[in-house]
Image 1 (cartoon, one colour):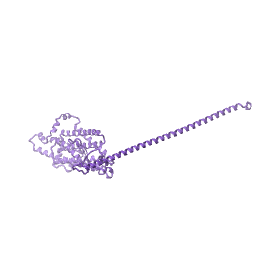
Image 2 (tube, rainbow, N blue to C red):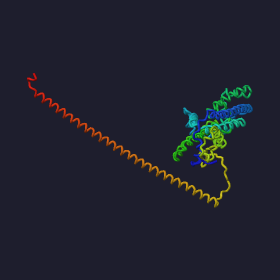
Image 3 (cartoon, rainbow, N blue to C red):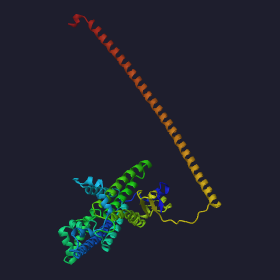
Image 4 (cartoon, one colour):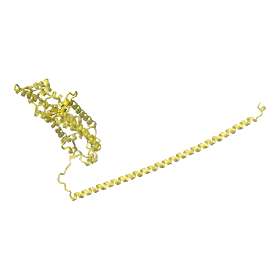
Length: 457
C-alpha cells in the first residue's frame, strides 16, 4: 500500500481511467440492491429486538408489580447515561428549548442535503467506484447492526416509559400480538419491508415511533459518517489539480462543515435520549474502520473496473502496476492525523529486508545518475535545436512575407501608374477633340456669314 503523491507513477496509473464509457444502469442498481437487502436484515434484527424488549419489560413489570411505584419501576428499566444528564443541564440545551423549528429538524435537513448532493455528484461524474464503496460499507454496518440487535437486547435509552410513549397504545398492542403469535409471518415480513423502504431515505435509521430497541452502535450516526466520508473523498478528487494552498483551503472548509454536521448529530442523538452515549460515540470509529477497509476498497474498484477492457489501457501505463484499489484516511482521525491522505493499493513484491549501501549499489546509482543526466542533456540540446529551428523558420517566413509584401506593393504601384498614364492620354485626346469641334463650329459660322442675301432668297 503506497501513499498518495503527485509524481509520474500516479498520473500514469490514472491514465487507464481516461476515456471510459458510462457504466450501465444495472451496475448502479446492484450495490443499491445489496444495500436494500442489508437494511432488510438490519430492520429484521431491530424488529425482533423490539418484540423481545416489549416481552421482557412486560414480564419485568409484572414481576415487580405492587412492590415499587411505577416511576421507580420505569427508571430501573433503563441504563444510566451521565453524558445525557450533562447535555440536558447545559446552557445550550436550555437556550434551544421553545424553538419553532427544533434542532433535530435542522440537523436532519443538513444531512439530507449532504446525501442528495453526494448522489447527484456521483451520478454526474459517473463515479461508480465511490457509490459501490459507500453501499458496501453501509451494508456491512447494517448487517452488523441487525445481528447485534437480534443477539443482544439492550434496554431502551429513554427507558420503558419513553418506549411506551413513542410506540403508543397501538404500537405496544402490535408487538404484544406478535409475542403471542397472533400475527402471521407474512404480516411481519411486510412490516419489515416497509421499514426498510423508509429507512433507506432516513440514512439507515428507523423511526422511533415504530421500533423500540437499542444496540451497541447508532446506525444514524454511522450512516451519516459514511456519507460525509464519501463526500469528502469525492471533493478531494475533484480539487486534486488545484494549487496546494487553494486545495488545502477548500478541503479544510469542507471538512469543517462535515465535521460540524456529524458533531451536531452526535450531540442531538445523545441529548434527545434516542441512543446511549456509548452507541453514538462507538459508531464514529467503527464507520471509519469499515469505510477504510482495504478489502471493501478492492471490491469496489473491481466492480467499477469489470467492464473496462484491457486493450483500452495505454501502453505507457503498463510500465507501472495498475491500482487495485484506493483507500482514503480523513485528517480528523486523531491522533493519526499525520497519516491522512489517499493510499493506492498495488500488487508489488516488496523486500522488507535490511537495506545495505554497498559499493555495487553506489556504482549503479552513479551509473543511473549519469544516464539520467545524459538523457536530460540530450533532451535539452534537442529542445534548443527545435527552438533554433523554429526561430529560423519564423525568420524565413517573415522574409518571404516581406518579399511578397514588397512585390505586391510594386505591382500595385505599376498598375496605378499605368492607370494614371492611360487617364492622362484619354484627357489629352478629349482636349484635342474639343479643339477640333470648336474649330469646326467657327468654320461653319464664318461660312454662313459669307453667303449673299439675294442668293439666299
